[in-house]
Length: 442
Image (cartoon, rainbow, N blue to C red; front, side, top):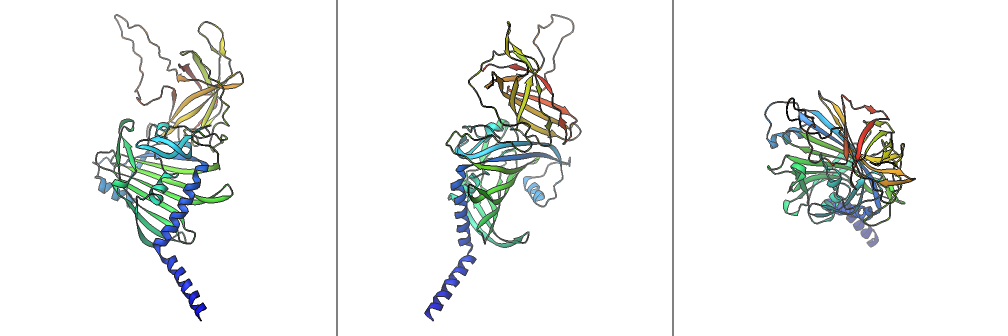
């Protein structure tokens, strides 16, 4: 009889533990800690599809409160303005961002190293967010920042899940919103959110977080939603974000980012990391060539390129490698061939943006970084040649002028921009596209 009583008490305690939301939360948190502890051994490819929308209505803008309420009720009407795609590699390390360091490192996809540049150094324009690989999980579940609530069990797609809420007050928040010209202004913001967990496996299923922004910023709120799943890596499996969405809501426009993680694999290393270059889906080129010793070309030498591969604008992304070949030799100003005709030049797509509406077009920005010389890949710098040349102003008569168009102060000199007016979402740039460039000082 005492043995049966002990067994009954043991079963009762186990059942009570299963029904205790605080115990469930602790188990979920421990599973997330296990993932975070192992993440520094892995690198994943992050593809970000970005879209900008403008309201259809020409009526005066609403207040932020009414705009947010309308958005949540799915009543907002808007039209697409522009979209682009980014492809990056992300890993855990040390990367210098505003207010110190963050654990996430980024590089263009397939690059052969990470360095101390942060995500905002790589992607200088448009809406972007960091932290979705690991920092957000650490902020909510590992560090002592959030307070939690239990909202009850719900059934989602036939699956029983437990819903929790959380709140991170301003004084404990590490969320920083950058805005203004060149992201030169910033504010901190608190966070509120919800998450769904599987009470059987103790896995995080979905995480949603919102940040209300103060009036001095250029937006009303930001919101992020991430779906999580088990990924098998290195003989085991652990939790990773599979996809997510970022929405930045403002009175003048909406920005939405769709994020997807793929091609996760293990690496070894510390702050500077080397791994085999990947061939991402939609890439326009193969693996990078090994970089040789420094190669110096005099500044101001003209050369012409022809890109050797087609570019499918529906799949191309900033970060994808791109190749071209010299259609004529690069020559010294006096005489002699410095780089022979047909030499391969490599670079990366820096922007791949679709613009919509009456003036639809596709914007392609390219940065060149190396060329094959003597069987080795040599780094060099170049700028797109506009074709305009300085001249002496006429003393009288008709005044000559050259239209240079608008100046983008944030534009990198090494980035060449191509515009394709009328190009739709499925436009394909044929191989053989020619362009003129000038060498830059090293």
